[in-house]
Image (tube, rainbow, N blue to C red; front, side):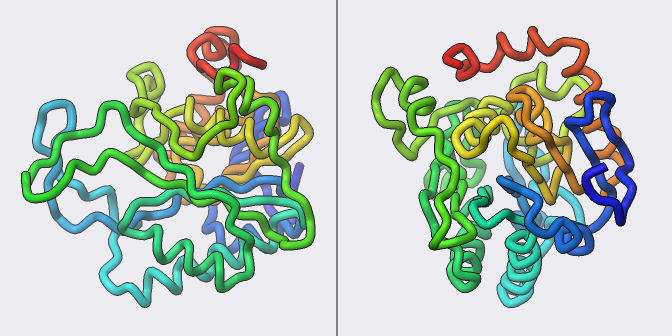
Length: 273
C-alpha cells in the first residue's frame, strides 16, 4: 500500500494501479514527496448551460456540478488550494502537468507562478477532429493546453529528450502535438465527459517520467492517466470522488490487463520504444 493512512478503494493484482475515493485536497498532503509526476485535468468551469455539437448532434456543454464556477476569485482559490497540496506531494525533482482551456488556463498559470513553480513548457494539443463552432460567431475551438512545470528551481526534472526526438523522426520535439479526440475503443467501459485520448497521455508520461516513477492524477476521472502509466510500466495513484468514474476506471484497468498487447498496437508512440 502506498499510503498507510488511507485504504485504496481499488488496488490491482500487479500493484501498479491504486485508486482512492476522496477529495484530492484531503489526500495529497498525506503523500508528502511521494510522486515523480502529477498529471491533472481539473474542472474547466465551462458548464454554463450553453450548447455544442457532438457527433452531429446538439448537446449541452454542462458536465456536472463539479464543473460549474461563476466567480474568478472562487476559481483562483480552488486552484491555489489543490496546486499547493500537489506541490507537497511531489518529490523535489518532480513535475506537474495541468490540462486546461481559456476558461481556466490563465488562473492555473498564475497560481503556478505564485507558488514558485518553474514553468517549462505550454504544450498545445491540436485536435484533428474538433466539434464545429455552433454559434458561428467566433473561431472553432480546436486546441487545449497543458502547462508543464517543475516543483523546484534548483532540482533537475525528468525529461526524456532522446525518446521524444526518436518519436519525432530524429528531430527535436516541438510544443504543438496533433492527436484526434478519444476513439470508440477508449470508451467501451463508459466515458468521462472530459476524457483525454490515450495517445496524448502516453506521450506526456513517456516524456517526463522513468520506469520507476510513481504517477498521480488528483482528478482521476476514468483513469486515462493510469492506463497510460501502466502501459509504460509506471505505478499509478488516482484520486476520484465519483462512484461512476471509479467503476469505469476499474473496468478499464481490467480490460488493459486482459488486452495489453492489443492496447500497445493502438498507441503510435509505443512503436518507437
